[in-house]
Length: 285
Image (cartoon, rainbow, N blue to C red; front, top):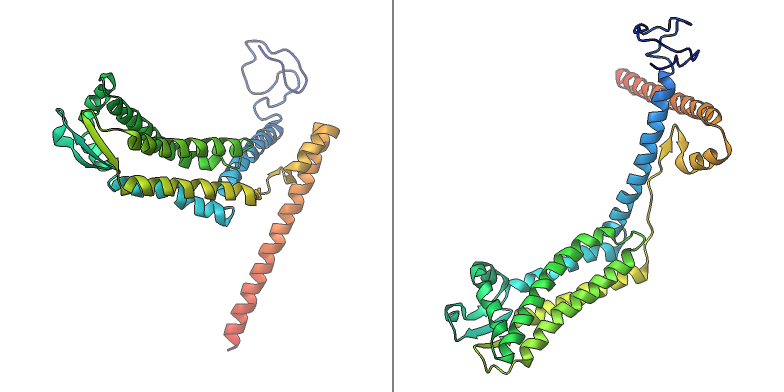
C-alpha cells in the first residue's frame, strides 16, 4: 500500500477509509489544490507549444499580401487542367480515346490508363516518350496538391527549404512533359501535340513559384499570441523555472492571479456603474 501524503505513515490494506488513521488527514483531497495547479501548468505549457504552430500557419496563409496571394496562385494551375492539355491520336485499340485530352477526360477514361502504360514496352521511341511524359504529368498534378498543403508549414524552421524544393519539382514536372511531347517524332502508335491547357499550366506554375519566392524574399513576421502560466507570461515563467523553486513560483502565481481577479472585478464594477449612469440618464429624460 501507499504512504500518507502528509505524515508519510505506511497505510495497510485495512486502512481503506479516506482519512489517515495516524494523523486524520483526508487523503483524497489532501494537496488537491496543488495537484490542480500542476495540471493547469502542464496544460498551459502544452497550449503554448500548440499555439505557436497555429500562429505559424496563420502567418503562412494570411501573414502578408504575398501569403494571401499565394493561396490563389497555388490553386491557379488547376484551372488549365480542364482545358485541352494535349491532342492525341491513337492508332491502336485506344483509337476511341483519341482527341483533346484534359484532366476530366483522363478521369473518364481511367480504366484505360493501364493500356497507355503498355506502350512503354513497344519498339517506338515516341510511344515511350509519351508514356514517360504522361507519368511525369500525373506526378505534377499530385505535387501541386501536396505543395498547397505544405504551404501551411512555410513558416516552420525548414519551411523555406521545403517550399523551394517543391517549387523546383513543380517546374520540372510541368515543363519536362511538354518537352517530351515536342520531342516525339510521331512514328509509332501515338501522335501527340501540346494544347493550350499545357501552355497555360506551365505559365500558372511559373507564377505560382514566383509568388512563393517573393513571399520568402519579402520576409514575414510571426505574431505569437501571448500565453500565460498561472497569470505569468510564459516567457517569464520559463526564466523563473531556472532560478526559482516550485514553491516560490507558485506563490508568485497566486499573487498574479489575485491581481488579475481584482482587475476583472474592478472592470465589472466600472461597467455596472456605467450601466446605472445610462439608466439614470434615460429616466431623467
